[in-house]
Image (cartoon, rainbow, N blue to C red; front, side, top):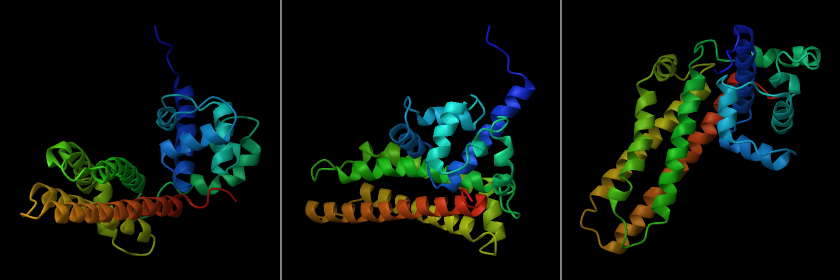
Length: 248
């Protein structure tokens, strides 16, 4: 029989996971990027991004050893992450005040992190699509082979545009305190439009000669890559704007 987790133990998991998530967002890193840096830059066993998600979601308690390594890479005091650890509570108290009170901007409580997570997911699908298209051979471009990834990317972006977080950002508009979330929504909207247009052109070659068709495909792919880069950068800026500086 699996060991039951007490309410106190789960609360500690949640507090450490929430702190890790905020610090990672403030640093502008995806979970895979942070996992790679921790594994490469600190001594110890490799840390997977799946493990990071488990910590952030409160499924597993962030240990002292991993927490110290993460803090070193994120350039925060270990107490930012190791909530409840008596060795770190006192020095961390003042330093964590900014992160504790900046989980979301006043106009958009709780919703903007959802938007950033959606951008992270879309960036992963988009990156796969760009790699596939750039590796296409002139005589092997078949939209049927790419349809699944196109639909995955478009589905991710469509889903977030139907959500409450998106509606809150649009309702607040490009006003003070909402500039970065607004820019992120615009970048995501542009990626969706570029992806949809690219799929349409891929499906309908418009009678072009193979050479011209391939050149246009590469130009469109470059446009998508630029849009994904802007979306990722906007998500990073949004995270920093919400959580404040990663360390004093």
